[in-house]
Image (cartoon, rainbow, N blue to C red):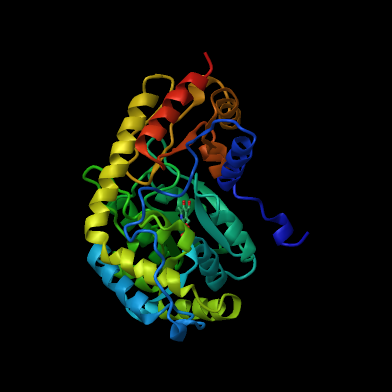
Amino acid sequence: MTVLASLPPSGTLAVGERVRTLRAAGRTIFNLSGGAPDPAPPVGLTPPAITPGENALGDPWGEPFLRRAFAERLARRHGVVRGECEMVATIGAKQGVYFAALALLEPGDEVLVLDPCWVTYAPSVALAGGKAVLVGLARPDNRLDVAALEAALTPRTRAILVNTPHNPTGRVFTEAELSALADLVKRRDLWLICDESFDLFVFDDGLHLSPGAFDAIRDRTILLYSFSKAFALPSYRIGMLVGPEPVCRLVATCTQQLISSVSLVSQKVACEAMAQEAEWAPFLRRTYQDKRDACLEILRRDSRFDAPTPQGSFYLFPGITRFGLSSDALTARLLDKAGVAVTSGAVFGAAGEGHIRVNLVGPLPVILDGAQALLRGLPG
Ligand SMILES: Cc1ncc(COP(=O)(O)O)c(C=O)c1O
């Protein structure tokens, strides 16, 4: 079988396809599975113009104006100091994950990924010729289990791939957890890939910490960012990969060969969005914290849910074992009986079984109607 023939479809995007089919057939569906955040992007919806002189293939690293602005943002927001040759523009964090794997892995190399985790990591590692090895978060509060990560290392382990704020659990890893991880990465001569796509979605008094701030592992850390979530610009398909210059050079060469360059419209819009971050970030945080709290309040009306408060991301990931159904079965029942689309926790790995993921995207009243309908679809 070819590598592509063995690539599974995205378990999260498959729900959206089902929603589209049901709606086209005339059913009313509350979609609590969408991945495109609202409110509207900070820069509005008018794409920036491309002048005739600009209508050309651009810099495979990303335009210098974007990398300069992103370097300033990284230093300002996360205390991560990097030069313009330590970052490459990507077509979203998705491409960043794949190209990072291509840059680091030799055939058969292993990458430790968290269980549960976002559905794209393991297939990207496999596409790059590697093997993802799942390591569970520590229950009950989904802490990074650095001892378990260390126990899973083999001579083939090349990298550890984490994501904070974490999809799907909503955990925001602490400084203590991340510095223990950094220590492991340094001691065992590994790479750390950290997907920070939800860096602006941190609630209450929480703080997002980037492992890019740890100098001791600076030369072995790759950071991935996305404008899809933090700046609500998913259709522009733009993100950034940040890492040591030799890795960025490999990624830029691969970009040159496979993509040429990232859309200039997207690079311009990303810059405009970053210029509005000072007002946008607190607004986003407030909006999503309100959605989280209002939706949790409704779910908790049924005491069978085990619904802890997520610290970040835009997901709820309640435990559902007390309903006596698998994640897939409850998800199917909610769609069938109540017209509510959620994502089965099982798509995020074995540790996701026993959960459903509820996405807080869309206007608050619509989410709340969906949450009420969800309660009506639960088994009696
Ligand atoms: C953890 C995580 N990283 C990255 C992405 C996608 O980022 P992008 O749209 O920039 O490819 C998602 C989308 O759901 C995600 O959950």
